[in-house]
Image 1 (cartoon, one colour):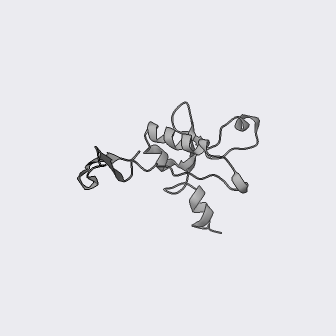
Image 2 (spheres, rainbow, N blue to C red):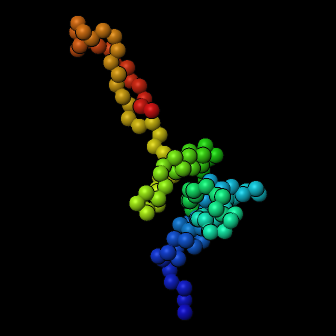
Image 3 (cartoon, helix red, strand yellow):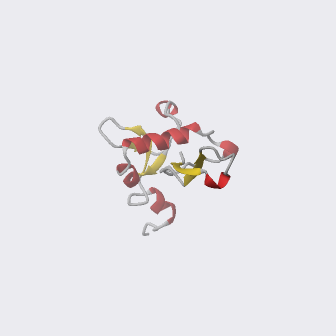
Length: 119
């Protein structure tokens, strides 16, 4: 019988959507540990995993990996029995905020405006 295509086989198998790795657990020779933890003693010491497909992990910079893992581990884990999800790539900056400066008490319509990026 042929192996079914799609579903969990596609999701967790090899390929563009599959082969999930834990970017919070780098291997010594390069690459990352497989996603998830087992009940073995060595896996109990591992911190909460941040899993992404291997293709995504390969194109992430060290700072992007650090940011994603830090954001994941800073959240409360397993609230309500559900896994904790965070975006792999954080939004950068955002909208530009207009900030008024100078004395606007006398003529508010003549206040100078300064464009400040939101952080």
